[in-house]
Amino acid sequence: MRLHPILAALRRHKTGVALIALQIALTLAIICNAIFIIGQRIARMDRPTGMVEEGLIRISQQWLNAPAGDNAPAVEQLDAMQRTDLAVLRGLPDVQEVAASSSMPLQGMIWSGYLTLEPQSTGPNVQAAYYYGDEHLRSTLGVRLVAGRDFTPDEIRHHAIRSTAVSPVVIVSQPVADALFPRGDALGKTIYQDGKPATIVGIVQRLQTPTLSKWGSGWSYNSVLEPVRQDDATASYAVRTKPGRERAVMREARKALLAVDPMRLMPDSWGIQPFSEIRAKVYRADRGMAMLMGVISLILLCVTAAGIVGLTSFWVAQRQKQIGVHRALGARKLDVLQHFLLENLFIGGMGATLGLLLAIGLNIWLMRHYAVPRLPMAYMLVGMATILLLGQAAAYVPARRASRVPPVVATRTV
Image 1: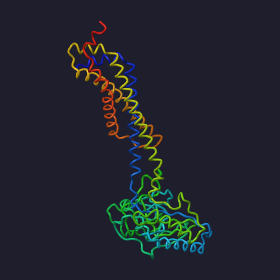
Image 2 (image 1 turned 135 degrees about the horizontal axis):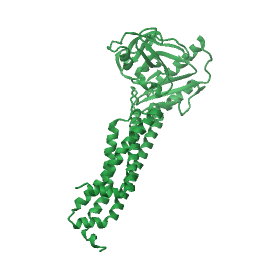
Image 3 (image 1 turned 45 degrees about the horizontal axis):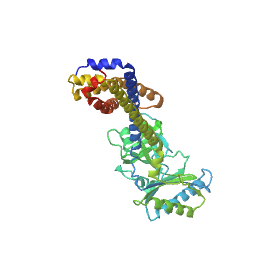
Image 4 (image 1 turned 90 degrees about the vertical axis):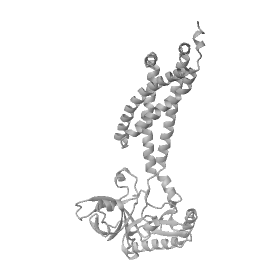
């Protein structure tokens, strides 16, 4: 098929061609960045925490009758209250394991510091999140131990939440071990937590930090387990239940704890929650953003397809006699179909080329203002192919209708 008639036809309809090409360009620019953002959000929501999340419950509560101050008697009384709660929860029939737990992945509340190989912060400097708990913490969370051992009961300490004391032993995540000891010999080595020494007695495969903030994105799996019960007016526990018994344990745990001490605050919204609910709440905004972007992308694609259908249909109606003349001169149905599809492909190609430039520009703007990563070329190429295929599919019906115009149409106005 010769290109001259196609280019001549496009020059005669410059306004329509420009409008459709611009619509395709804008759609492609927005779609590429929207799909990339959706992919980023989905990847963020699918990140593993490193725990066995099924059957895991978090209990957060505050004693209204807690002793005030950080003096030794107050700390001992708070720790006794916490140990009583742990014993009560451990005695529930559907509970497999219970641990004191200052925080969990996705919880937002975070204690963090810097790990070094020397007390004066020389050499590798690794930022990490601290998880405080007792000897049951790792197994209750379901974090996989890849080397070393768990804490022993005699290694567990307790102190006020504002204490700066550091335990002499720790369990670190594999990313921390790799960052400090690239040769893989971290087990048994001494590290310094904010300048204070501690020996690595265990290494877990992976444990996500509690924060999802941008400032913590560079060390999302740098975690340290500390054998410390923190004593305060608030206390949190991790509870692992038998399969499928989360809701039953939540009801029984509330009753049991209130029976021991009714002077405590455990709101329904955050007092006792399954971890699945915590995950859903934390990623609600990401899920909403992904859905919004998906709906916007679908609407844009539908509007663009409708525009292509409308323009091609208009051209077919305008050129009925011309099509009939071509048919009378021997043009086949396939020739007419290919003519209109090729016309549409030219328009789509111009719009897609402009759209790639707009997509890059939009991504640069998003990078500067919203810290969005650079848009990979693969997204732009896939987006371009998608928009061209959509355009051809949208133009096919009116183009097929044009191919059915009979030669006799050429003589109707003679």
